[in-house]
Length: 155
Image 1 (tube, rainbow, N blue to C red):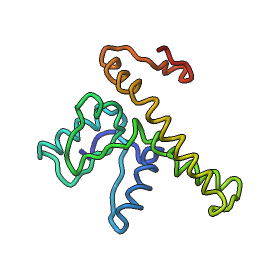
Image 2: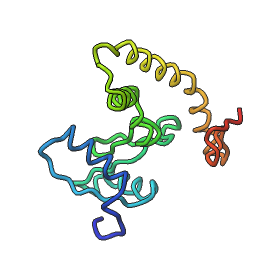
Image 3: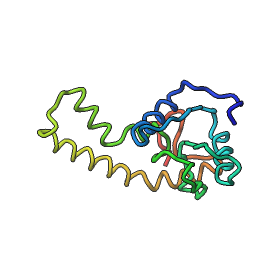
Image 4: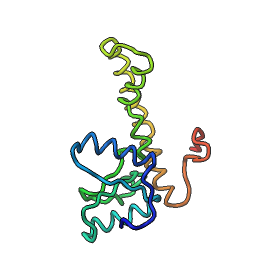
């Protein structure tokens, strides 16, 4: 496993290192970015089958939950959203960025935090059906979303 081609300095690795440092302090991990989802999925399949141990596979969720192909194993970890980039821009992260940039008082800005939470929740509800349907369309080489021009939606 360790002898293949991989990178040790990617944005993906920094994201996962931060999560593991926060949620598993005191543990030592060697992070390797092996490139494609297909390669990570191959390792994850071997973890689930028991042929690989002492390894954790971490990957973007993509559409696994929508299409029912997510692997269920404690050493196979998915992002919460479609990708780790989506996970970075939660309501909390947006609020913390707002506080950092504006220097606003946390106590005085609780109404702004509540409004951000409500907007994120509503957006999640509004887009849920389109995302689920897009997961089905992706399997047929189609999509609602123009990935070259993400602001365009062809509904």
